[in-house]
Length: 370
Image (cartoon, rainbow, N blue to C red; front, side, top):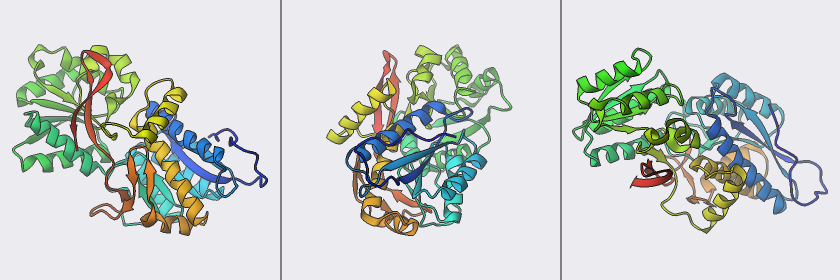
């Protein structure tokens, strides 16, 4: 457990701060790179709020808890943060972890903005306490399925692991592709070695393999095996969940990690605000910021606007979601009720299908936009 450094900015006459809880995967088995980018965005926005005078003269303080991709740990963190009197909870990257946090926040009556998790069923029942910035999985993964069809890939194999998130993604792909002449076959990576998986791809005549698995294991060994199999030279490897987004992917796989399309939530061109924030994030991270870092910045910016306009009472914060109108780094942010989604949803952030350019793996190519 840790807390961010003392708030920066002007000296405040009132020593009391407005506390925001932040849930972030910072240790394994969490996706640590994603957590680092998410926290960089959250922290940068907090510092900018405080440099501008805070919340009605009170500094904003980020109280950070590491979820380590553990749903029970996240739920316990929400309990702890509620006990500390946070005005709201924000963050999280992993969908199953965010679902546990959202469920607990709803039960306790704590406002929660989910920054980066996409699972449609973030809560079992509709709730007024939770809002989400990331697109729902059903929205973005259908866009990804349309990209596959447009690229002439109709026989899709998915390498899977047991998970609500991966099962949901498989169902979305199968349902969307079935009406458009596509087929989906599941290959269980717990039962198949990478080499046996290659044999199955040949047997099924798959034209695309989607990695619905964790990173780096087993995603990296699977990519190496497929790239090294001469029978599969024409197959498209895809990773809709975004495994190739972060530098570790390129470090581990080199040229083998290029040309693998994934989803990211950025516009084709950032506006002036996005450009400014992106520059600041790059300096903090020492590398190009991912869309996850922008999600973090947007999250705190939304909450700061809500706190200024509606105060720090939890019920007032949750009641403000329908009235949010904030300029984010990736476009104007508003929350609405979306059919099939139980939380207040930004419908929709920009969605792209991109890959790492085989000629220059540190450069991303936009292949499709939705």
